[in-house]
Image 1 (cartoon, one colour):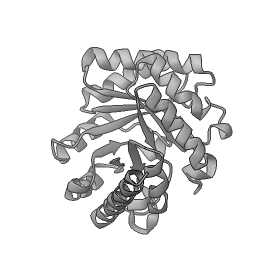
Image 2 (cartoon, helix red, strand yellow):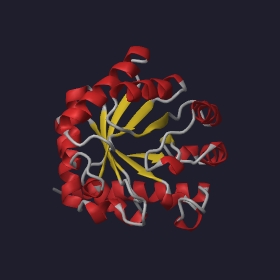
Image 3 (cartoon, rainbow, N blue to C red):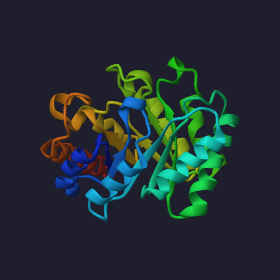
Image 4 (cartoon, rainbow, N blue to C red):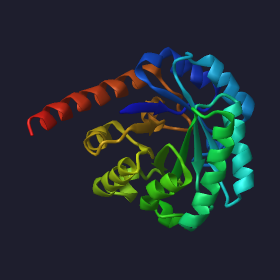
Length: 250
């Protein structure tokens, strides 16, 4: 399982760099603009320069509307700015066909520029609260549009968590559908250390966190702490070892 950490700017990205041996992906977003709010191109470039070259950078392009052309340009901008993973939050898409249209445009824009970049169709575990596409439709949307990964986060950051909206068995079905479609499966949404056992068990490929590695567990007032990143990774590795033993035992 890969660990994705989301700093809120260049200074926190430098903190991530101090803990780079414990994380796999540095994520660029702007929480002031939403759950998957887009940051500025120059911030993506600065963070790309601030973290070790062997650590890929991901960037969100926003909680996007149903506007395929607008989203395609935003996705290309993220790729041009140095992102390897480009995440599109399908906030304004109410049907799978709308979501496929948006993601197909984003995939073409990114892949024409950089074929090795990874495009992520991102939905929301609390989709019922905002009226967007069903979370379990995301893997098929990602497959139909040529994406590389499907991801779930939470749209409304009010203290509720991924498993508050989708229990582990439903998340497991999401992961299964993603894998059956040949996609990576990513899960986020105020994920904590206590969730790592379930996330490991269901086969999550990428786990995204912020709260759990910020001082006081506060994504807004707290700041990413390298020691908390290291502790989170240690627990991830412990869960992986434990699961491997159980799995081997049959």
